[in-house]
Image 1: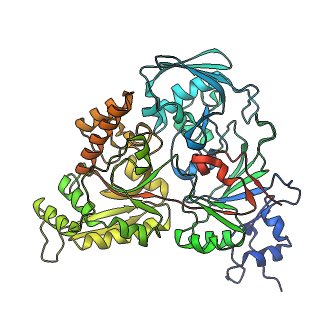
Image 2 (image 1 turned 45 degrees about the horizontal axis):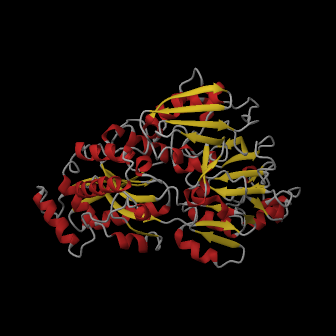
Length: 558
């Protein structure tokens, strides 16, 4: 007799089964058993029968679940993975970081670098049917992204004004040359929003945060909190014939083993950013219907770190921060927690920028052989001797609430710092609570985190270290409360320096000073694996944006 199935097990109209279901007797139901009980063929559960060869319903894992769907407010990874299919930018980023057209079909830059004229695509409409015009561009840049976007406030501050001589032309007037600006105008980094939906509202409270309306290849249909977001093909998309997929379903599955099982059983087609734990990647890659790639992360250049609240004891003392940096074994973390995915970080700029001369390893080395002894000496010098119980002081470590690796990292931090006399209590909260604690209330001592360093330091590095980026309520900026006039000046000069050699020298000095001050323990340059079903085609065409591209070129082979 077929066991009873909870009604929540089947997501109506999607042909998708909820992997977190249980039978009426409390036992876990396998994917195939559930399908059989529902009378649904395996092929139907993955892709609809009517799907053409170039279409299909693609199910992607997004982990953790997003706090909102407002990329103009937050650069939180899960948000961008979904909304990059809904919103678009003026440009997109192709192979080798080439700037390619998106909502802007062409542009000209004046000889002095102070004026950029964008010519917009014809016939673009918002998902609610309203026409897209230069007024949307002007409003998005000046009234939304400059005001509330975590990185836009810094990146776009150089834009003094945007003129709209006609509906299809937007003219940017800059206060200074900004060679980093063009690459930042992509849909993930600088999403263009609909003026008619935002004007007269507070962007922080706009209803599109939960019901996004864009110009992209996929339209928002439904968000069932805790389970999935459904996006359907935009039949009126301005790129004729695209997108190829009929639908994208972004699934939220909190349990790592269940995510792996869902990929293995072909219930889901795609998982990026550690959605499939690293320890499962190699095993899944051996299956004939599973593919893996580490491509698609070049744009973000993610860096794993331990960051300190430098405003409060004990981490207001540079020597304590340096001691923690010495106490942590980066290679051990890479090998045993991230299963070999990554390389030790030397500072705030990733080594992949070595080709541009912006990276320097002429910095203080925390990976020396006697690092533990140095940590002990620094803690003694800072006035934190061991007590009778061997403990110097007690602190709380906030675990980044993303993937299981961060839980294991927290356990390692507790163990490693315990060896030098620092007793660590671990705290794990959900994403919204963690974000508020770090970036609004500053109610923490130290936390694991990872940030995107992005194609230029102005985009991804300045926001974390410049003192003007201590902005309560804005996420993924300077949460360390760290301020240094010297490094502020170096960043300010490098931002506008057009001579490559001089710019490289400024950033070399910046890296040396930041690493020595240690507001962050730079752990490792992260390497992610994207795992996907072999029936999903054109995945590696997404270029350096990877999962943050719009997926207009993907399809499922039937």
